[in-house]
Image 1: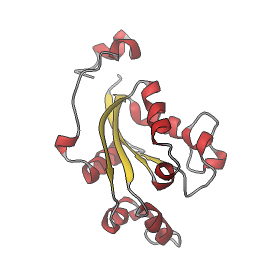
Image 2 (image 1 turned 120 degrees about the horizontal axis):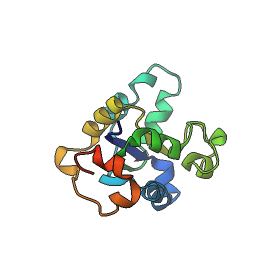
Image 3 (image 1 turned 135 degrees about the vertical axis):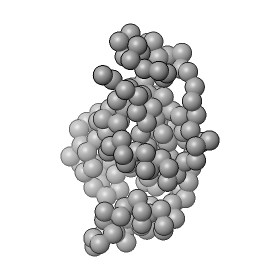
Image 4 (image 1 turned 180 degrees about the vertical axis):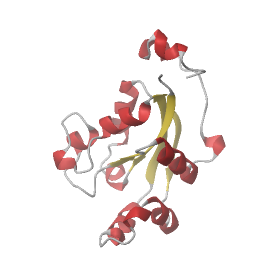
Length: 162
C-alpha cells in the first residue's frame, strides 16, 4: 500500500551561495511533490551537533560545523506518496562527482562534502529533522488540484488526503 510521507530537504550553504535554490526546488516540483514547509534558517552549533551527531568524533566534524554555520540554509518539507525514496533519487548519492547525471548532485556538484543538499533517509529521521527546524504551525496542510494528474486513482484511493 502506498502512503503519504513527509521528508526534510536542506539546501546547504554552497547551494544558496551558488544561486541554485530555484533550480533545486524546481526538481521536486517537476516530480510532483508538494511543498508544505519552507524557510531560511541559521544553523547554530547546537543544531549542527545534533544533526551531525553521527560524525561528532570524526576528524572532519569541525569542517562540517564551519560549513553549515557559514550562511543560512533553505529548509523545506516536501510531501507525497512514498516521497522519501523519490527525493533521495532526485538528490543523488553523497559524493557528487560519482552521482548520476540527472540528479541534483550529479548535475550541479563536484565535491564529496560540499554537496549542495541534504535529504532525510528514513521516516524516523524525517520526523526528527522536521521537529528540529519547523514548528507545527510552519507545516501547511492543503489540497493540490494537481493530485489527480500526478497520482493514479489507486494511489489517491489509498490516501486520506494529499
